[in-house]
Length: 348
Image (cartoon, rainbow, N blue to C red):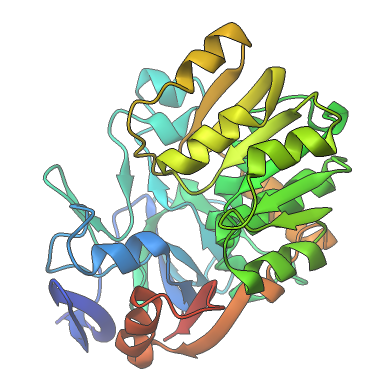
């Protein structure tokens, strides 16, 4: 008889319940992880109402997690029960052309924990136990707490975005649009790589203040300042060498293109839904390079090193740590956009 465990289940859109589910059964190449901490991602919050189309109920959401290996499959070697770990949110096949190139984020058979769509359903980590392919598991160094390790997945998105733009230390100035969780992490990764001047744009006062505390030179309110014009002023008319859009709306894409120098680079991070706009012509006449950045592609070891060395701090970004059973209330507060909430960590 299968073990019964507690989980936070999306039973229907806008209906989260803390209930019993059967424990997962691991395959020979998988490990069973007892979850110690799991983060609430913005994609989960928006999945709550069905707007993403990628959280079709019933589903156990959650893809940002850490815990302890409880059991290993018979084909697993090199990692033992009792090991503290985090894991890649992406399940990749390892066989397709993209996987062979190391671009596992573009895997032809890619699945993501806590996602249910037309193509597949993959329960996630809002539960006491989760089954994970062993090849996607990463041990934690002693200095890294479970709460911090639950932030490795968003950190890997930030690191991957930075990896899309080479020569960061030589950039005159970088601009980050959006000071949410991903934007704050991109900021810190830029600073850790020697970018001496980083400007952050966000309408929220608390997020701007946090960005300044984490290393931003300037934090601008786009509702009060023409960000592109201000960047040109700060660079004596030259423009920034690099910009990251961690918002994904037409206004930030336009400002991102508008603030860049000739030959500058714009990295579009995550969901991107702009309308077609005339600023795209500027990418042609100024030879601006635009890069898409999707999830992460094997950056977990680098992320864990950044955390262990203290080069990136995630503790200031964690707004609250709460029991998994209180998940519905925290989802509601995040859904309503309560000010100051960046990352909530749930603990089974």
